[in-house]
Image 1 (cartoon, rainbow over the protein chains, first blue to last red):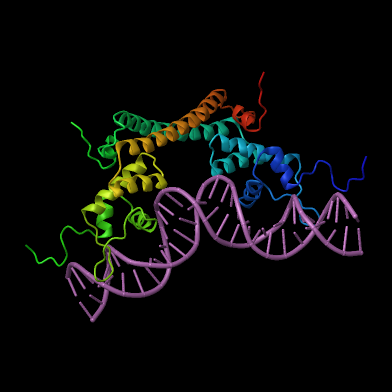
Image 2: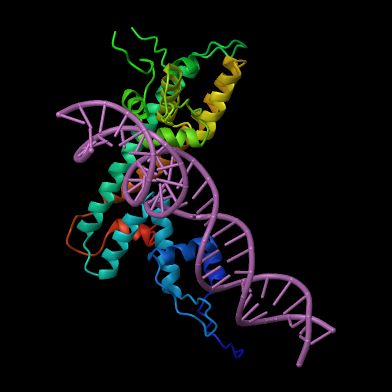
Length: 143
Length: 143
DNA sequence: CTTGTTCCTGTAGCTGCTACAGACCCTACC
DNA sequence: GGTAGGGTCTGTAGCAGCTACAGGAACAAG
């Protein structure tokens, strides 16, 4: 109705940020590292985003939530962008990432085991002697 | 026996690195951020470390292995340095860190669950359709 | 004395953002 | 038409926790 001088489907950067939940500056960062394409600009140089940008940014954000690195996301996106990807390709990348995630969990569980066991031996007393400090100073009271 | 012109108990930076397994440059970094004290110097300005440095560096490294941040380690060390610490103080810091570790584990397990479930639905076929991509593009085939 | 290794310093790079400064531009109101 | 206030633009610096490299001084071995 109104003689809107810009396409109603075009979003400003702040609007893209709001509608995806992504930080404003992060969008610019993703453009600078090539994850997001350089968007078209208004005559004054302001970024104008379309639906494709919203979808791509959502893709990136969901991949980040799943712990994929930028490099992995770059890989996933380039597969999709080429259009010639297969489920097997994607699955391979996913499985590799899953391995990384599982190994991080194992590392953290190792830490958790040591910490919780050590702390359980803490008396909470007002004395300097402390099992956790013993572990850290490697008074490893083993055998 | 030999007329060694430096105290046999004094280590060069490379020797401290070797005997603790710490990276050479990391030692300098720890000094620059104040975790390690500035060591005494030889007349020519070369760092000379003693047993106390070895122990402190080992402390830092073990704390890092347990995932303590620099800030937490700084706290632990300042407790110890003050000499007036209690087991209760240390336990409190340890428990806080344990909470952080457990929350990281929970986050990663959430990721693991989604990833493994999704990937298990991958066919590995040479077709573009892929459950993992569906999740990432939020074709969330729910309900 | 020369060669090669180590040491010194300062600085830049990595990941994945986040934030700020200073300059534009755009909109609303009067 | 003017102006006040926002939003946008760019470049750059900062966070953790290192790691690496350049260019120079010193030292140890032959």
